[in-house]
Image (cartoon, protein in one colour):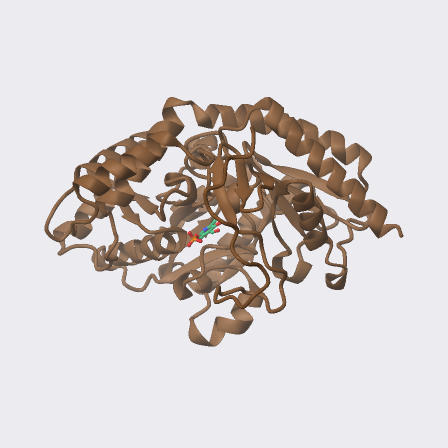
Length: 458
Ligand code: PLP
């Protein structure tokens, strides 16, 4: 694909900037000019492969004409009309489409403006339902450590991230946490499966210790996002978690903000475990594929209808279910399904997995390859034998990201919990990616890791 003709003059570089950079002294970033397919261009004409779809959001790639047309048409018709006065057709159609794909037990959809709002909405929905059902003692939401369910304070309370809790803990009521079933670093004497089952048993112990009658829900990412680097637990873990939640009347919430809408190779990642389906699902990212902020909570009709009959959901936002966002979401989800992108994600995910495992043979710093569909991660280690992580001051992940960017590949990364659980890069291109593009991405990763190893051994 050729670099496009740029219609904007490159802005002055290096002068004062009012942009809220999050790190003082950080090098100025390039200014984005345009996107098409899996590529983004900056104002100086440099091309980048969007190797993680931003933060795993741009599922359809860039410049999708159908989504642009839907946005324009809706904008011209009516961009905003409050749900307090009107239903809107885009909201109705998007609700029908998403709940039909999600399947039985998830018949109602409430649309919000992103993943954090979806988390807040899910736990408030669960709480309101518990109170209505005469179980007002249930309010604790257990989650995994580490985990990430959003940046708002309610979501921080249920995210397993001690760094964030250190800062914001006094402002919230932190909730109980149980271990995440990591598959790469496993305690001695365990296999990945036995450790996962031990983590599930820890959930049951936590419920009993807290008092089952006080526990509202357990929330987890069925295929992990950034917090665990695309962690996938064994089937038996999901079944045991489901059984434990059912046994104790605890709602099971799957946070599919990252894994949903085809990213992991099925419409929902939860569909890999049909016997262990959750009670509530949250979506965002791929729902509008980055074309507008959009998230959703999917819940059973029985739960939502009971709340409606009792006076309504005591929660909402100005932009909940607004026509413009829903029209964009409708075009994005329709495009995802009609182009069979979940299937493409599954096939291209297998190819990517194969390529990354080949690279692992050559590159000693590539410790682990994991994920499902096009939600993959590579874990970086200093010593593969000992699975030792680089020290913080070595900036391993930041340097690899920069080496990849120099070679035209953008990768989203995280040093979770100050490296306590390891550090990884997400490899998650748009679901439209082709076999040739997967090979191109793998080649750049290989080159970047080779360059990093050369630096590291100097
Ligand atoms: N849940 C998960 C699993 C996420 O990955 C994210 C964001 O990365 C969120 C929730 C929060 O979503 P948002 O950033 O749209 O608020």
